[in-house]
Image (tube, rainbow, N blue to C red; front, side):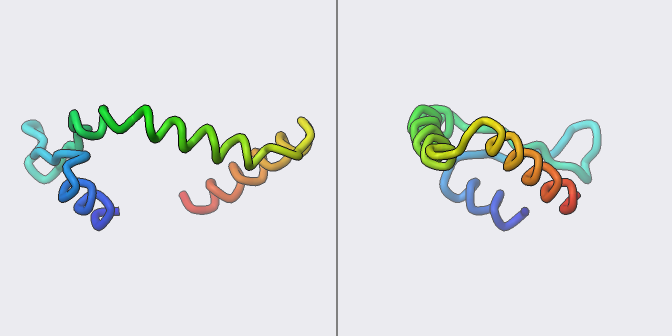
Length: 76
C-alpha cells in the first residue's frame, strides 16, 4: 500500500500530511491534479464496466458481484 501511495505522491496525485492529533499517523489528500484527471478516470471506468457486463444477464451480474464481494472479504 505504501509503495502505491508513494508513487501517487511522486506523480502529484496525492499529498501526505502528518495528522496533528496523532503524529504517528498520516492523512492522504487528493490534489488538484488528481481532481482534474477524474473525468478521464470515469470514462475509462465506464468503458471497462460496460465491457465487463456486456453479454451477462441480470442474474449473472448479481452472481458475479456476490462472488467478488466474497473474494474481497477474504482479503480483509
